Amino acid sequence: MERVVRHFQEELEALQARLLEMGGLAEERVRAAVQGLVTRDTAAIERVIRGDEPINELHIEVDSRCFTLLALYQPMATDLRSIVAAVKINTDLERVGDLAVNIAEAAQRYINHPPVKKLIDIPQMGEIAQLMLRDSLDAFVQRDTTLAKQVLSEDDRLDSLKTLVFRDLLACMLEDGTIVEPALDLILISRHLERIGDHATNIAEDVIFMVSALDVRHLPPAEPTE
Amino acid sequence: MERVVRHFQEELEALQARLLEMGGLAEERVRAAVQGLVTRDTAAIERVIRGDEPINELHIEVDSRCFTLLALYQPMATDLRSIVAAVKINTDLERVGDLAVNIAEAAQRYINHPPVKKLIDIPQMGEIAQLMLRDSLDAFVQRDTTLAKQVLSEDDRLDSLKTLVFRDLLACMLEDGTIVEPALDLILISRHLERIGDHATNIAEDVIFMVSALDVRHLPPAEPTE
Image (tube, rainbow over all chains, first blue to last red; front, side, top):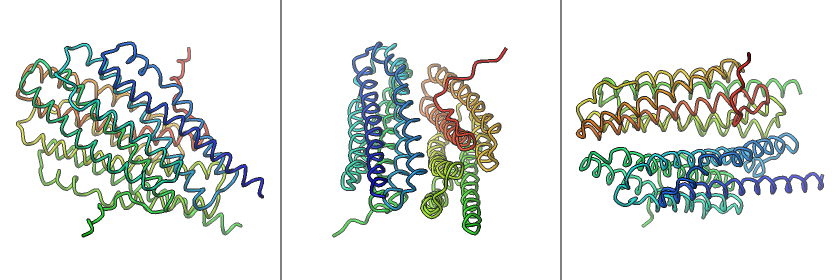
């Protein structure tokens, strides 16, 4: 039995390592897509668009590892919650990879036009989204609910920036009809970044559930204490 | 043992019934949001924005049922795949509920402006998205991979319509700068509908995996036969 338990822990660690690898790839792809937009680098943007394969392969591998762990070891309690969390996190990371492609596609269209003033708060949104991804995965591996909760509050910052970007670009479009196309692509990019933040938020919520078996989704925000 | 097996099947059926109920609610909310947009019905739109609670409650209940089934019965093979599929489908349906809110929020802004010509292909996109949701859940309950594959091809139609809507509205915005705001909201609505189609596609892919243990995600399209 001890041997089985040790195997399970080893397999669980291997699974976590794969998820971290996926998270690193996803974060790097988001960074590269935003960087390609900022530097107007066609080749870099192309690489993001064509580079989805490694994450997709890991997506299938992680799912298969989760099934094997569930079927062979029939884990209970925290171990069971960890694996179900891994199934969900795997889905979230795969979507983040897709969103990096969406950002790169919009960036590709965007750089065919003259730049729309500055890129407003989009580079900052990109940094927050990457940070949220990293923190949510660190929280998963370290079972750190404090860090997970920090991710939830970072998401509020990202949402506020998205709203600012939207208003700012809308004002630009209303003032100057010739920038409608590129401004629209920036709006789409800011929404893709917001969705990446939503995926990191999902991961953080799964971590809180995994560690504490407490479902924080759909709860009203806590009342402020005196 | 026979008693345990019967219980498991009963519990699995109860789980499926809950998912169908959630799917019905999600579909109805998408329908109501698009209908509110078409008829410019503020009250109906408000109801969609405020009406997320029942899906959110089901979301937590379904997750909890999945954990109980995994922990108590330690299912194998197809049964295990069914429950992991249910975990994923549950996530997809909850997001569809959120997207109905997003559609209603954009519709609420939209109807503050004079209408942008016709609503282009958006009502049709709404119908396809609802059909895809219904078909993907029917495919889940009936373990029908043919129907699931049909959902995947419906998604191509939805994507084409989204591209048409985008081009059409972009042309309108370039021609008449005063409609930038409402046209932008229609573009966002078409993207929300496209994402609902993506969630139905995820469900259909999970059904194919559940039934055949074949992972169709990230596969290149099949070669046409002679």
